[in-house]
Image (cartoon, rainbow, N blue to C red; front, side):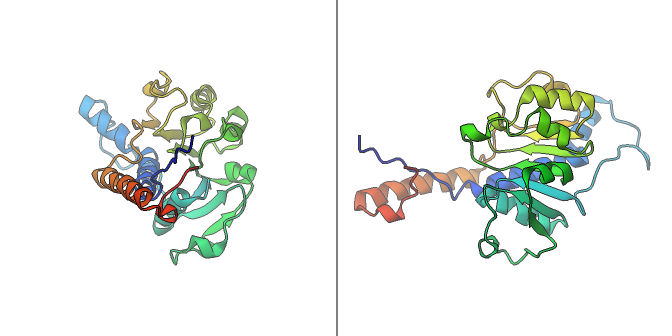
Length: 237
């Protein structure tokens, strides 16, 4: 019908990567869990060997989907002393990665299987298509290390939540942190009861700065359309 559809891809990059990194940090260092238990009076006593968690420094982050958000997450992780492995439909050209942070030792393209078997943190940062529905299923979860964490700030349907709940119950992985859900807005009830799960209500782009930038991007698209400047628009189709 001649309808032009546009989107706002640029303003969502940094806020979403920021939340992915925050969730990864939170689930590893047990921040939300400790806060909740202190408020409820259920925390372990203060002690040198009590309330232990895991560091990000020196760990391997596996990114599935090395687009703009995946790269923004990688930039934060490298600055925190992490090693990056990633899986994409095809390797990203080194010249596109940039940031002045990439070295052969800090980032590596691998198969999905190697990523799942190797990474201490697996972060989903890929767009949704039917081909990648349940890219994290029972088989994928069995490949992950029992000390590994799953982070999802992409799309809920990437993860088979029934399989995830079972993997968490069996101790097949260490924990999960999620901003999106398979049957959103419903959340699997067992996820709500698990201390090693951090949940966020789909707030990846939900910052004041991000929302303002998205509104400005929409306005820029409208103005570009009015001027007939198609090249200046962020176009979906």
